[in-house]
Length: 110
Length: 111
Image (cartoon, rainbow over all chains, first blue to last red; front, top):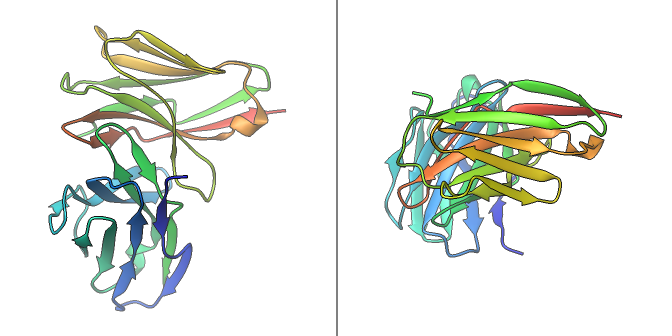
């Protein structure tokens, strides 16, 4: 069963901490994405990557960075966590057509 | 800029009824139109998808209707069941794997 695995389901961090969210896919997909999902705001794209060591900003990249050192792994980094980054974070990978999403990481910043 | 507009935002249907969710797009470069289903606490999962050269696709109780000239597509859930209660996202794909998503519709099917 192909999958996208996010390392943590729930995470609680303090304001100002550096936070790493990890995502691994086993489908050999070129494309990987990070979204955040908030009530009433749908899925908002933070960053995406079309290849190893390649990254592009999405719609809301401020306060975030990413790393893709290997094809199967795409990491989202919150440089200095703030309370407005409390959210559900979804990682996805895609072939030419459709996305496969992870189960999400619910991050709370206190 | 909202590239895919989805409606309604929420929908309540009685068990056995038909649920209909609509999406509209502007960009004619889109070449694949998937729908995703998301249950609470889970990530969205691909439900059904259609290409623009087809007007309808059916998988079990789920049907996509596609109107290329109107740039609209819709999801129909026949004989809706309480287990169908979820959030549904339409999407449009282009350019080697990029997708843009609608804002989602929360469906509640009452027993």
